Image (cartoon, rainbow, N blue to C red; front, top):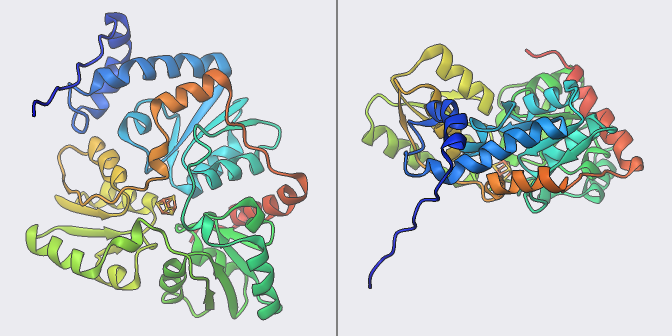
Length: 338
Ligand code: SF4
């Protein structure tokens, strides 16, 4: 059977000229024949951002054409929450998953917060409800609840303080108590429990991306790529974490690469993260096993363009939930980093 190759779109020369400086940033991870498919959307999004007084916040797991092409601010959940609290823009477009857009709305109740695809969820956020948290409180009376930001606003509203993978230990130890409930990520809770004297009661949520990595994967990577430095995300299992050279949030991994410049490195996390860091460090060799987050991948350039053209999908959080949920996020932001 004959295969027909898709014809690349014909893009006006002035558009290509305007986005050429952006292509320079991603040329090591986006081949030239793919670039025309992105150019017009990027050009339109940059124009729409100015017209709408919008800022685009993109998570580290967004694809390079979004991360390097249209985002104003990039980072992990903690960085995006902090930046969402600081922005002066009238409109925030959150290129990430639903709980991140909710968090941005909690911190900016008077602003318009858009997510390009309402179906961009998260297996961790979906593993627990507000009713589950109330049952946990009944079972462990007086034990504070620390919720990962990867939770719905409804769950945050039942929470004492939020945390991210970058500040979980600092948040838990800031409470000055011997025992905490930490939800919903079982692996993150177990990995943090190994670093602190605080007893951690875990929930059974898992990240569907990070739970797929195994310690055997790490052994095979080391055998196939001698000298590779292994950086792992703390949503991986304790066995994977034990097999890694460094464990940190996506921001922590990025900082490690910037500071230590390992000549050969692998990031055990969602695969766009490696593409985005590799684009900035063409001199380093990135080994790239690929586990995609299907939720993060629902965000696309055409979706972002549509969101800005139509001002959809606007995030709303009911006032009764927003007030206590905001308090839990703000308590987290007030905790000093370690
Ligand atoms: S990578 Fe995991 S934790 Fe992050 S959004 Fe996807 S499912 Fe959720």
